[in-house]
Length: 121
Image (cartoon, rainbow, N blue to C red; front, side, top):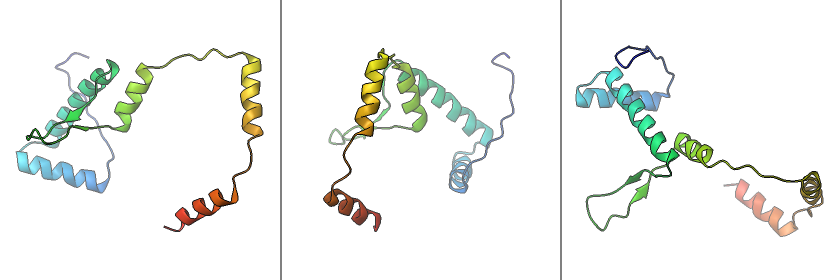
């Protein structure tokens, strides 16, 4: 497939995202295909940047505005995959980890109460 070829894509999105897409198309006078094509292009560019260790940041117009990092599940996964490392552990070390996990003490009553209090909210 060359760059000039066309691929038809069908996607299922939430009603909220679909409405946002239609609103953007209407506001900008663009087709859905144009918006989706640019969104894919942008995601591919951002993934390439994440692979090289860069982050996406939004900066306001004022110098007082602090930059905000923009994260998505896909970009986080790309970044994580780019930094994979192998852990070399002996069978004895793995068994020690299993034993430690299995022998961990039960949660204290205060912790149980705290966790149950948060469940009511």
